[in-house]
Length: 333
Length: 276
Image 1 (cartoon, rainbow over the protein chains, first blue to last red):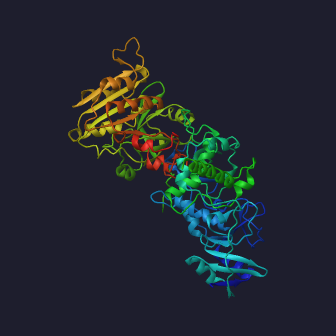
Image 2 (cartoon, rainbow over the protein chains, first blue to last red):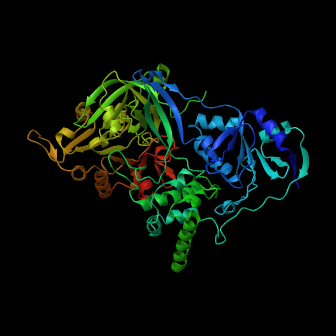
Image 3 (cartoon, rainbow over the protein chains, first blue to last red):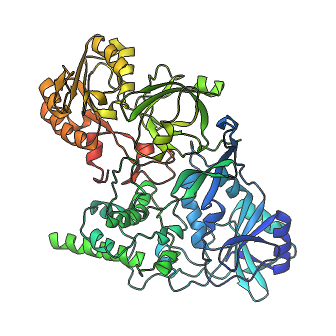
C-alpha cells in the first residue's frame, strides 16, 4: 500500500503561507483568502471552486469614456502564487472539463491559465452529503486525480499524498512529516436505484422524444442549477460604464434563460422551456461525452439537486429518460 | 504574454454606405499596422464587432478576401448594439475580433459552376464568395447569382451589382417581392425566380443565405433542380458571443457553430437536431 505523509496542521499551514495566498471556502461558502486554515464543513462548499478560475464576472479590458478605445487597457491575469485549501474531488474534476474549454489552442484564456498555473490545489477528503453522487462517475470522496495534494483529515492533522509533480514538491517543503500507510479510498455515493451512465448516442437519438416536454413543464428555467454547477462554462460579453470609465466584462450566463439563444432579430431556436432543459441534459450527458470520450459534463456534486426550488432531480430525470427510451427499444425489439 | 482572445483590436471606419433604410455597410481597417498587414480571412468567416461601450455582436466579414486590409461588415439595425453602430461614420473607431469559424470550401470548388441564391442582408456572407470567384475568374465555371429583396429599396450592394452584371461568364438575376412605380426589373420570391432561372446542377455547387423562410423554401428548389445535399451550402445563424467555442451559446448537438460552422452543407445540417 502506498505511503501517505502525516502532517500537523501547523506545519501544513506554515508551508502554505510560504507559498503565498491561501484560498479557502469561508463561512458563506465562498472562496476567500485567509491567514489561518479554517475547520472545513463536512461536504463541498456552496460555491464551486471554478469561481477562482472562471469567475462569475471578470474584466476583459477598460478604457476612459470618450478617450478613444485605441487606449484600451487589458485586464491583467492574476499570477499571484498561492494555494486553494479544501478543494473537493467533484469540484477538482470539474476543472479538468473547464481545462478543455479554456486551455485548448488556439484560444487559450490567459486569466484561467494564470490561475491554474499559480494556484496549488490542495484537496480535502469529504463526508458526502445527501445529494452527493460522485460514485455515479466512478470516483469517491478521497479521489486525488484532479488535485495536486490530497489530504485526509485526522484528529491531530492530516494524512497527505501528492498526485502531481508540483504536489510532490510542495509536500517536500512541509516540515516534520512522517510516513504512514494510506487507507483504501472509499467508493463514492450514488442513488440506490441508479443503473449506470446513459449511452450518449442513445440520448441524442431521442432528441425529439416527448419526455423532454413532460420534464420541461416542471422546470421554471430559473437557472440555479447552472449557476452553481462546477462544470458549467457559459458566459456573455458586455460593456458597462461607471464613473467615466467603460469596462468590457465577461459575465457568467446560463442556458436556461429564455433569451440565451435569442437573436437580435427575435428568432430563438430554444424558445420553449423544455428545449432548454433538454439542452442542459444533453450537453452534459451526450454532447460532452461524444466530443471527449471518457468525460461527462457532470461530476455528481449534487448542488443542482440540493438547490432546485422545484425539487427537480437531475439524476432521477436522466434515469427516467433512459428508462423510457430503453423500454421503448425493448418493445420494438 | 498570451493575449486574451476576448480582447478586441481597434479599427477605424474608412467608409460608410447606407444600403437601405435599416442596413449599413462599414468598410474599416485595423489601426495596428502589424495586425493589419498580417490579417487574412476566407469567405464565410465572421468577426465580433463592437461599438465601444455598447457591447459586441457577430457579423460575417463581407469584404473581398483578396484585399484583407480593407475589412467590411454589413449590419442591419435590429437591437441596441446595431443601433449604436449605426450612429458611427467614417473616422469612428470600432472594436474587432476575428476571423472565426470554418469558411466556405472555395478551394474545393475550383473548376465548378457556382450558383448563389441570396435574400436581403443574406447577400453579405455570399459577397466574399462572389469577389473570390471574380478575382480568380478562370479558375471557376459559370457564376449564377439570384438575389432578391422585399422591395427595390431593400436591395443592397448597388455598386457591386453593376460590376457583377458585366462580369464575364456571370449571370445576375435580381428580383424583388414587390416592385414600385419605378421598378422595371423582375418581381417574385427568390425560390420562384431560382426555379425559373433553372441553373444546371451539372458540375455545380449551390450556396444560399437569407431569411430563414427564404432558405426553407429555396432548399427544395435546389433539390428539385438536381443538386445533391452535399453540394448545397449555407451559413447557420446562431446567437454567438465569444466566437472561440467557449461561451456555450451556439452549441447545437455535439457542435459549436462558431468553431464547427457557421458554414455547413445541407447534408451536414440534416444530421443536426432541428434546433436552429
